[in-house]
Image (cartoon, rainbow, N blue to C red; front, side, top):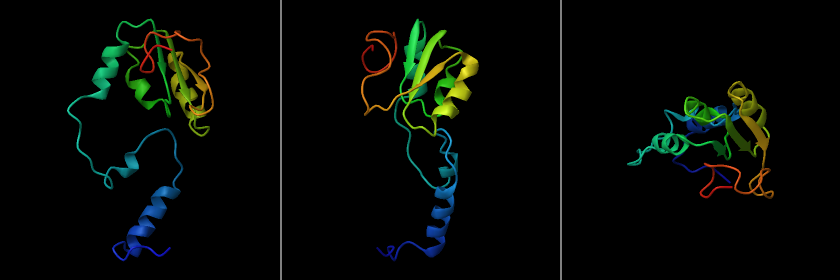
Length: 129
């Protein structure tokens, strides 16, 4: 398939260079000058911080490289766990979150039930799991 006439060879070369770089975690810093968006009228970090404040146990599903969970370090209870389904990110998250005592379990959301008992966590997916 030929590229659209609107896409220059230089732009295609730039995209190819960016997408060839190794990926670690969920940092999109390389797309800062490429992708634009507007912020929603709410703050996910604020909502997450409020949800975990006072919790006895927390589960972060699909933690990526653990970057966001690290921002909540001062609020997380000792009983905090995470899952990650992308094998490339699993060791990244495990290394990042180990100093907090957060265990990161491998879990593909399409591959079956969570590796935790039902109703195990105060804060986790939409309903306690």
